[in-house]
Length: 231
Image (cartoon, rainbow, N blue to C red; front, side):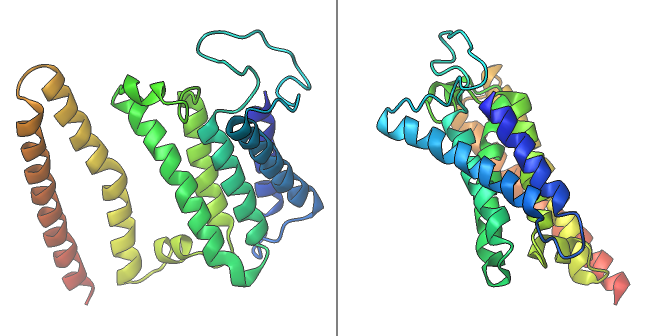
């Protein structure tokens, strides 16, 4: 429940930052602070074993073996909420925008680890308390929220490069798609092949490395030819 409230608070903050200056209105600042507060208090409960009574403050939920703390965000979710809430507030200070981008990048890294674990069906990842109760829908929502938070930061490097009508923008758009899709696809194929017994994990690593090299060289050639046409 607290996770849903915090995500809703982030949504309010992002909605209020929809103008060209990305300045938060007071509801937006309240949303960012609320997300940061929920994440911080939840994280403190994990770290020090406290029970502040906020997990079932609004709704009482019954426990189950997979959810030792009903109503509480997972540890990774709490960290991500802290990072995104802090990023939204820091982005209001122009001289702190780069730090805000760094915080969002760390948050997105955490969501990518969780998403990749679900895509590749790596159940052992969710035996760690850090990722244990983070669901697939939650991972997807956090990933989209993280991208939106990054995009909302004034003059952020991501949007400037992606939207640039230049050779740099052209290359960034293609490399970004490659970075998100190809490594995940190759890793999935490698893992499935090893699980089916087509090869052992050592040989699978060799295949993964060689295939990645081939794809990178092919991408370099395609981008080089495209840039030559633009000159």
